[in-house]
Length: 79
Image (cartoon, rainbow, N blue to C red; front, side, top):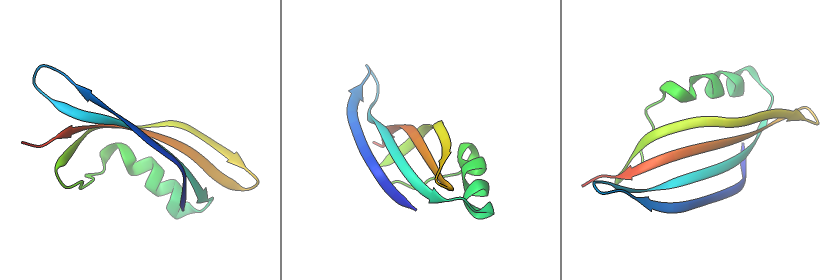
């Protein structure tokens, strides 16, 4: 797996601060990769100092026999 793009922008509300993240990944098209993508909505992802509040698979396509996916995540800073 390789990260082909990564970006984030900070956000804040009256009670929380955090960031919106966008990750583009290139993965081998294997049963393990497919299982990992299918499990993403239920995974507990440790991120020191932050809580992953929302994670979604924004896009998934196959090009040249490889999976190209975009993940979008919303994180909240832990107090």
